[in-house]
Amino acid sequence: MTQDELKALVGRAALEYVTPGAPIGVGTGSTVNHFIDALAASGLRIAGAVSSSEQSTARLRHHGIAVLDPGAVERLAVYIDGADEIDPRGCMIKGGGAALTREKIVADLADRFVCIADQSKAVPVLGAFALPVEVIAMALPQLVRRCAAIGGAATPRAGVLTDNGHPLLDVRGLRIADPEALEAEIGGWPGVVSVGIFARQRAAVCLLGTPEGVRKLVF
Image (tube, rainbow, N blue to C red; front, side):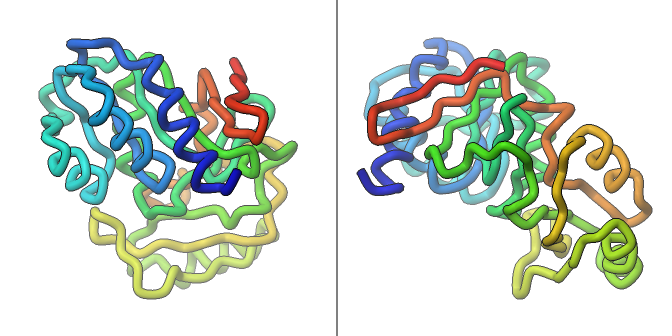
């Protein structure tokens, strides 16, 4: 199976976690696109979706799925999103699609985070994928230096601004053995909007697409 077929496989499998008549949280990225398409084709009726990006909002609306304002929703039963990496405890690196801050906001509304990914995203230790960090533009140079001080090489993502209008740094060379500690450290630096480590908002379930079918991991 191709990587795209594996993504489609887990996108369909995630429908199991959708409660008819209830609102859901929806993430961003190519795997989530497959989930949105599967949801639209399934005939499941939901109260609407809280979206983490303009891209996902457009796709949901294209399929006639109502997009809800996060401020109008107190809680969500589930948030369904992909990951760039996920470790054996359900901690993730996210932000390859530049939506990490809004993803954290929507994930915080949800009782359960269901991660959908192909098997290449499962890693023993986070850090092979460059760590995205959304930042305030005026802080870019000093944040590059702070990343260097902890062993990371940070470069601005060329030509990319988040939906919030901020630049992104991609930090390479980090081996993230303690995701909670590094999320707290980088997240506390002045000028950082959000860091793409999801440890405090880790996955409760991961559906991994493999050539043998969907592998379910529960954390």
